[in-house]
Amino acid sequence: MSETLPSIGDMLTATVPMARTLNLVFEETTPERAVVRLPDQPDYHNHVGGPHAGAMFTLAESASGAIVLAAFGDQLSRAVPLAVRAEIGYKKLAMGPVTATAELGRPAAEVVAELDAGQRPEFPVRISITREDGAETGEMTVVWTLRPNAPEKAPEK
Image (cartoon, rainbow, N blue to C red; front, side, top):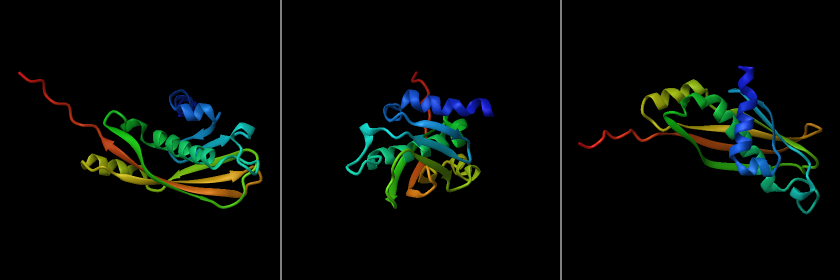
């Protein structure tokens, strides 16, 4: 399994321009946890010299997307993962590099069982944003869905 870990980060960096723009570093991506780091970059600072709120939102959303792909990548042939809504709270001043750690809020097997039953499951991903000293500067929840692909129509005669 460890051979597949870098591929999700590489795939997201290649296909999501904002991940590339912000130079996000995908440090860990498993079905249980994703850890993504935003380096300290003056071009993305806010008025007090820390990472801009928009950059931290993108960091956390990217971590949530990484865990969704790790947990549900085997479902991509029949469903598309989509973010439904997100809520973020900024708790402390963030300075320097920040790291987002994402965890699924529901067991993946439960989500897949709903998909198997013909439903469009929704599930939360919780993300903690921390500074290098370990202080939590923000928290975010992204609710995702697996939208089933439309069934293929039989060719007309």
